[in-house]
Image 1 (cartoon, rainbow, N blue to C red):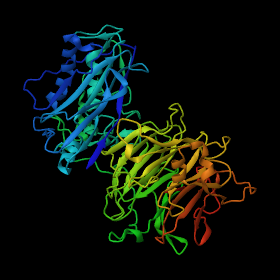
Image 2: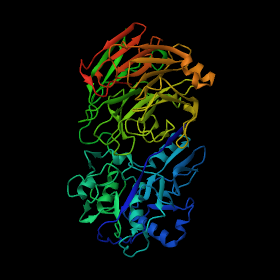
Image 3: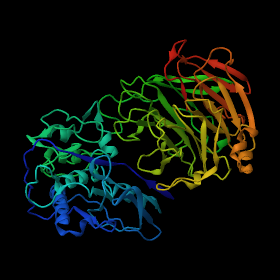
Length: 634
């Protein structure tokens, strides 16, 4: 078996402002079992050749080692006996690239942090910190060790911290000058991110309505939930017992700030055992934010495990703030239960994908937020057998309000589907692939469109176009983009390198078509190879189907439109329809023939069309009202 995992990082910005009070560093009287081990192998600029700088770094780590209890019980990571792994993290001397360390051994109750510096971390940041990811092969117990290290709550192997070597730093134990940025203060902050503050899923699960809802943090903040700023930090300027907090986004020149009681309380809320914090060791945060949990999803149809060819796949239709599950019977779609409101108070479009993520023979439902005022790209996964939420995570950095697009398929070929999440409107062309729809198993994180400056996001689909037993990825430009698409080999997905294209990029429609393309993958002609299915992001309701096998065999993406299998309109092109369409194709009724579901687009009446061997039928569950973001099918 093979799994991989990757998660984000955070920065600290510095600014020159009024001088604040200096906090004394708390001494440690008893050696702590928990240890932060610094590794300098990537210090390419020699920033830490000066022992004074290393001493400051160790003093920053001492604060956490002194308060994280001796019985933290992080399991050792010792590869061998058929179990191997590769640690992956950003290069602290060049934060634009990643480094991989094969079969790193880490002692019990230790984390390893790679440190270095570069000529300005970028954007005015004094530091950049975050925990690392991994890829691994071996048995399930080994995967559990890497993911959990023998305990509940957040438990990383370590990560990286990079410092700017162009900052006017103050080193040592004295008071920094009025124009100096205190190195100890920034190191304390970035180590907090390595320990999960602002970046761990356990942290994000406790953020709601602009506040952090952890019990320990609430107690430390006088009985109210402390405010956060949407970037993985406390709101700038808040205090803890009258003193500045470390985990705010900006550090003022001329000041020293140690880890506050509030900072440490938040670490306790995500699973660390912290001495001097009121409540006992917390359990792992619930999958649902504790404010208003989403309702249970009506159970969906089971897959006959002994006869996979007879399975019927449900369809999840996303609308404004809700989604509805349908099944296909005799050429018609029948609603299963009532519509579900997955995100309390959210009225934007809901994005959906269907897959068997846990391999239990029952389809599960993944839903994500579309564009909206909520500054989080949140994704929920419902277990199809129980109807309960089993995963709840934020796929991209807090503060991003452009929403996500989803797709699901058998990328690993192991009987458990993977979930693809791409950024939507306002986001770059970035997408992530999660094995088993689990945020701890990140298979890939890359840009699906080569122009990284494009900020319209991407649309994604999954299917096996080369019949190698593993699904491949079809990626298209999103909002504001042209009709450009890319096709990637699913076997080439890794956490650190871009995947291999199966054919060169091409345009699915005329170059004048704007707002990108919606995509699907399904075998429409019965040859055993998934075909490419397109719907325009705006304009006429025109569906195109391209024979992927013939296209790949030709090796010439410029000839893509020479291999059309179908080209049709679901609405008369002269009828004034101009919102584009969303497409989804599969064998939804188990009869061996392909069916296509087509959702109406932007600012059109909310409806969808079902095209099958029975003909084309129209369903209008939202009446005649126009939907600003259209209908999404998954």
